[in-house]
Structure formats: structure tokens, C-alpha cells
Length: 336
Image (cartoon, rainbow, N blue to C red; front, side, top):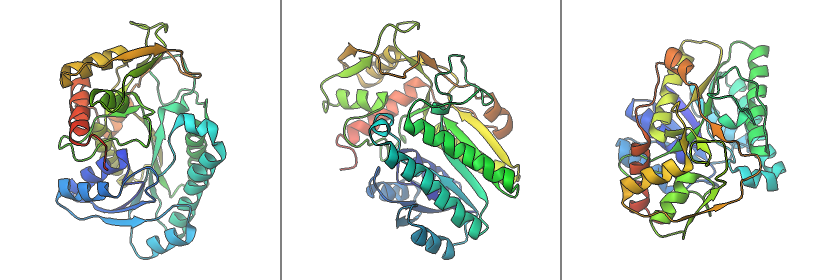
């Protein structure tokens, strides 16, 4: 099968491309490199010992995207491309709606034109909004608390409407929880632009001396130690979930929604402690005020993915911290 991966040079995209190549899929990546680095493409090829076609382009560019489909015979699309920082989305909502939603509309129009109707969409657990009931199940009510999450939810609704209008489409919506870790080689990993928005790269950059200390947003939640609890999933486990989703597409099973999470929550302090053990580094931190919109606890019920995709996680929090540290040590400045 020939798979088009939008945003394939990014964090989750690059790890998924490695898994695809190592499982004999033909891969074409389109990425505008706004949230990624071109060197990641070289690292993907180095790890897999296989070549990948890379096209620098934006999925908002309909003419460019049309030419990509005209020149290739794709069997399916994995759609990662999108802006993804919650805080930034609050500051520049129009850019998020334009990029994430308009880009997806453009992609779907071109897919429809060329009769490529197999799509895996990179969604997020943010679509569960402020839901307090854990673990989160796929049939829970959805909502959003910021423009990033709302763009994910709106795309899910658009793709659902698309399928309802034309059931020849096969669409898998994957709701990720908190991807962390890196490939065991240390060649690819999470390389955020500027100050990290997520916990693990923040901890890693403190450990490597790039940042002075970690900020812990609130220690008065109703959790075991007062800090927020989240479902962290190793990015390689997450990447492998996309291969199982491709198997689902092959069954022509219509529209499916799956949580991809570890199914267990870890508090911020537990993650810090696990990272200390794996790295041997002290992680200084200070407790600051809660962030608006943060909930106490979030973790997945991933049983549906286990039952229907035959997928489950294989790596625990120690693996996640060890591989994050390995990546950060080998790439203290990221891909630079």
C-alpha cells in the first residue's frame, strides 16, 4: 500500500513513518516544516534503511496538493498536519481554524476527486472537554475548552458528516492522550519550537540544563499528590496504533473512533520521579497557579482499540522517561 502522511516530519508523524516503512508500506510525506525540521526525514530513512518521498508543501495549497495526488496512486492518507499548541490557539484562533479546518477540507476535496477514500485522522483527547468521569470512553459526550481542541472536534464532526453523506469512505478517528518518549535509537523525538508546552520535553530540557526549572501548574487537585494526572503513552506504541488502524481501513468498516492511551494515569510528580530514576538527574521545580481549563484527572479506556484493532501499549512510564532522556541527551538542542 502507498500511504500519504501529512505532517509526516513532525513528532508523531515521523515515528509513524518509521513503523510504516519497517512494515513494507510505501510512504510519501507532505509537510510545510512549520512545526518540524527537514532533518527528521533523513533520520526516518536512517532508522528504517528505506527511502521516503518528501514533498515540502502545505495542505492549504490546493493546487500543490492536487498535483501530488495526480502524480501518485495513494491507497490511504494519515492526516497529522495541523497547529497543535493549546495556549497559542487561544491567542491566534483564526490561524488555528484556518490551518486545521480549512486544510482538512482541502485535503478531503482532493481525496474525493482522486477517489482516495481511506483516511486516518489524528484527533485528541481534548475533545472530551471538561468531562470529570474517568476513564474516558469513545461514547462520552464531547466538547472543547480552547480553539485547538475545538478545531479537532469540528474536524471529527466534518468527517462524520462526510461519511454519512457517502458511505464509500472509510475513516478512523484516533483520539490520542499524551504522547511522550522517543525512538529507542535517539535519532527522532519531540523537538518543540520555543518553550515546551508539554510536560516531558519540559522535564527533559531541565535535565539537560537548557531550562532552569520546571513549572508545576497546581498542587491542590483532588489527586493522590495534588498534581494533575494524565495518561502518558509512548509515541512508538501510538505509532503502531496507526498500523492497526490501516488494517481496519482494509476491512472497509466505515467510520470508527478509538482512544489510543495507556489506560493508566500518572501525576506530574510521579513523572518527575520516574524521570529522575531513569536519568540520574535532579529536576528542580516550582509550583505555580493552575492553568485555566485544566482538569484534575484524564486517562483513557482503550479497550475498544484492544478488541477491534488488536492493539495495546507495550511500554511503561520507565520506558517513556528513558527514551525521552536518550533523545534529549543525544540532541540537546533538538534537530539543530
